[in-house]
Image 1 (cartoon, one colour):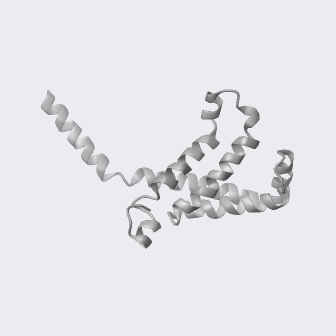
Image 2 (cartoon, helix red, strand yellow; image 1 turned 180 degrees about the vertical axis):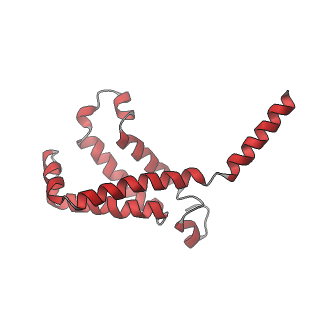
Image 3 (cartoon, helix red, strand yellow; image 1 turned 135 degrees about the horizontal axis):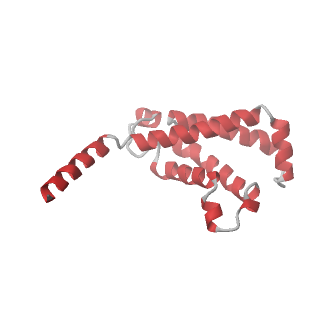
Length: 149
């Protein structure tokens, strides 16, 4: 019985090690898509975004709206491509932190509320990308030939 369990364990570890590139790729594409789509939408409704930012009390909303739109659009595309991933994820982390503090603050009355926010999940995914990089299937890896990008 122990031999069979060890055999299954070895087979499982063999398969998962061969697919170790997949989580980083999936994370980058999913998060990148969310931000690219959001940035694209904001770019095409800057007046509405500016007005919304003003209602949240964000200073210089007329400057912040196009800036955040561009950060989300360009950052999202860079994440999808796996290009300058760590660098692109940093300002996206900032946008999620600001979103949590401004737009979502009223929705948070417990840790469970905070943990349940999609913004929190995105922020954690972005932090993972900052610390661990784009992964094996990325332009970062092709261009810089480093396991650490």
